[in-house]
Amino acid sequence: MPDTTIVDVVGRRLWSAGGAAAVEAEVRLACGARGRALAAPPGACAAAPAAGASAVALSGLVAAALHGIDARRQEDIDATLFRLELAQLAQNRGSAVARSIA
Image (spheres, rainbow, N blue to C red):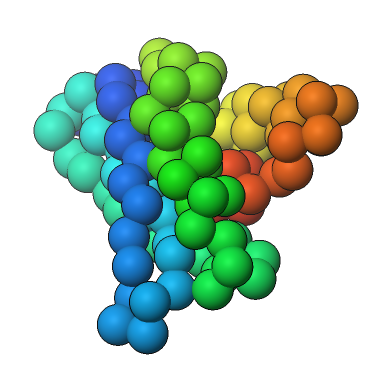
């Protein structure tokens, strides 16, 4: 069975053809498999700074929190993202990061 441990998470800020900001998350597993997802923060046209902050958080805080978790254990991933989201809300930073990769 392939090793499905999360080894890397990268966030990127992207722009749609209409100029709206979005965040792409790429997750890489130990077996070499990769997955990507794209999300636009609420109010995407006015959310360029939020998208940039979300991309940075994905590559840092979220990547560190998810590193080592088995990607087959969705409940562990969800619980980790929920804890991060609560911490961000407590700091009045919003929840765009968790929504962008959930």
